[in-house]
Image 1 (spheres, rainbow, N blue to C red):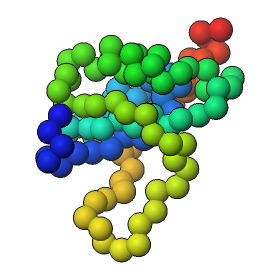
Image 2 (cartoon, helix red, strand yellow):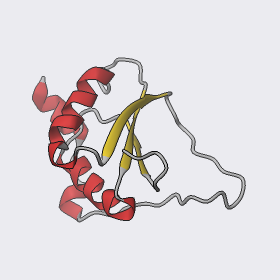
Image 3 (cartoon, rainbow, N blue to C red):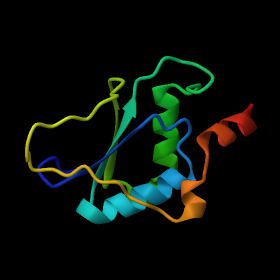
Image 4 (cartoon, rainbow, N blue to C red):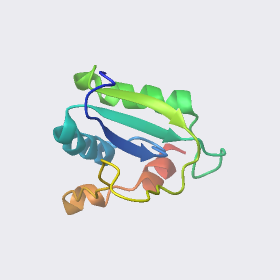
Length: 113
């Protein structure tokens, strides 16, 4: 990844990273050509059973076709994204088809038990 180029951000827990996240990644990648995927540090629980190393591995496996166009990093448990004025970036919702939006990580986690 080239840190000097425009980069889109994906922030989430990714518990686990699933097909809906993959489709979101593809749409986001179209915006800038590279994506930084930020994994929130979460206390381990039933809703957050996977540790960062496992999440990163799963993301990298799902995104094998996009090597060099993304980076996975661990960040604090970010709960608010705030800005004070026009600071040169956008906060934007990407709306995917209904069948993709309805993919549930909770249902996936329950099937893994």
